[in-house]
Length: 501
Image (cartoon, rainbow, N blue to C red; front, side, top):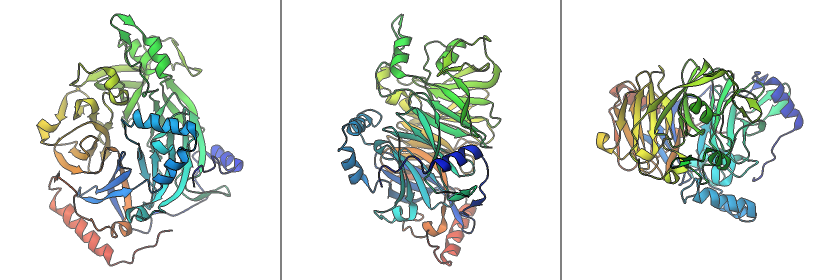
């Protein structure tokens, strides 16, 4: 299964690139005839497992789902090739903090029966049969695609669920894959087929689609696993040396129709132009406002949030730089920094995990409140977008450990879902009230948290429905959702279990 061919056929690639966003002439119906459960999908990176939580009741439905059933074979294959083995140990001792990175990102298919998983240590993305994986079957992997490089990272799912973007960490590119079986202009496309790619800076990171899927917002973070974190030694500026070590770090907007780069900014230079010299160019997690004009993002080493207006005229009206041959856009400027508490002011920058001060940013549905993961500060924060005022969530304010928060995302019911990687837990915060609604134990080093839908036929096979594992806290959630959930489960059990394809 390892080393799947990069492209299906030249004809397929031509068709897909030509059509861009074109609709399929025959698309497989997925999830239309079956009741689905909205869930929180948690990837436990160091454990190589997943935990699934009911998004409404906030109850753990299933945990310990194995996403690396082929681990022994993968490691045996890696050990046969010196270059792959070298990167395997580099990933383990660098980004992995001494651990293998088995589960970085995950998205389910539209029918909820399969989960695409990026696995950094194995430099691949796999499509896993969720029912088989939850049952402990060793043959749960149905497709595998190897990166051109040596590591995978963040992914992105198109709004219609048809396309998946995967960051190919060491090859400065993002690769697109199909998430469905469909026929496009007479050409068969299978789930897991590789389609297109667009270029990036060093170490491509996060990928986000616009709601209409016309644009892709992408950021690269540079070689975070290398030293040279300081921009200066006392009064002596060493910015050029820092840039040379870390590599090209760009924020860019991609036209999804043709995968062309329409805008590419060097945020280090944009920050300097706005009067904030010596800050990193590496854009970490981002949150895009509902109007798609304002971008909020974190940058390496900064304890806070940067506000960027993509449509405002450039500050000095000059082309001050080119990034990968693309001239500085004539629009786009840093408008504000929102500073959050720095609880480790004396920590050397080299000790920041993968150069992150903060790593995780989400925004509520109204676009008024941000939810930030204060990774090195051991807190999460709700931040008023207009005023910058914040509310801190940590062990002191909640009674629960908030150690090394690593991701935030928007969840069911206008909530913020937070992974607490060093606490092996996830927290759920209500954007509107600020209440901590749940605190749940999961697996070893939870990292990415994603919203998903799973067929009730799959949920019905799990023996852990309605139970939490380990110490946890959950708000009431309301009596009506609880009764509705019970009725839904009971009614579903009257139906036959639908077979998986």
